[in-house]
Length: 224
Image (tube, rainbow, N blue to C red):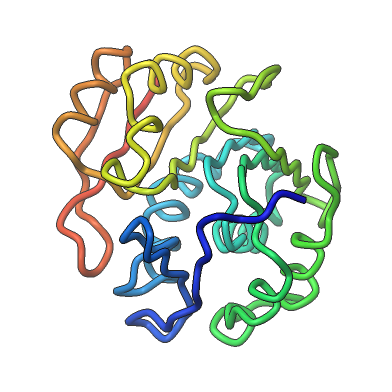
């Protein structure tokens, strides 16, 4: 496996849960002000829970990273059938994922086994993790991904524009708009004005929402 050039280190965020710091990019995998609370608010509350009335949900995550967003979604998926497709260019090594403290910080039945199964599951395959949650990890970039089914929700959790500008270009939003189902939503922690305008130019209806603790705003985009 190709060595991860990011060399992330584990740090404790403001809510006691772990995030990873990448010094070379001056970035974190999750908010240093509260990793779990950010994921629960941005991706679960403002994203997944907006479509809970839908029985079958196909979700695309850009940036599997620590697996935190997938873990929280699987815990909420008992009343849904969720096909969770996640993209990651540099999967984290087990010596990092095994030391993350999400199992201690998140309450729910079978959290430890669920988290282990997600990281142990094979890449490039659809793996049924629970009765209502199927995980498909793809080791590729968003630019290179092909053959996506119609997507109901996008968790856009790439590094910030200053660190990964290629993942915030107008062509990205056009590609995502084309692969999403009508009524599908995209949520991201980012609230930059240029990102909002580029999403709108791609055909999305975009809302500025109150952000998670420690951040003023976030964006939610809907495909009409």
